[in-house]
Length: 164
Image (cartoon, rainbow, N blue to C red):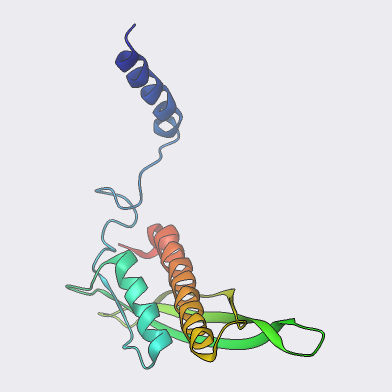
């Protein structure tokens, strides 16, 4: 048996359990999230964090072409020091963030799903003031990506219950 034939056989054997359980990829034709791409319009951003958040939602779910759903969200962040030297100088900050969200059917106004997600990230304050500000901005961007990814994952995972 050639190496190529063995690889094909192994791929088929690996896929067999998935086929037996009725697994369907979420975005496959007929999949629960198939109609989600390009159909979710997030509320307009009002600040840098919201801009990053909406950009990541669109990266995951597509830029809305003919939106069927509107995504309302509320973002919250707080910053605290986590690394402090013996002299009291802060060397590291932690940004904690949360996002409440609600997905509405645009045609009916009905709330289809809602929830809340949270996460954190951190950044160093050990450099110059300019590098600290740059690190803070990058940390906020990372946090918005994390929150948007969590919401997109929840929308994809639950879409079978409301995406009709």
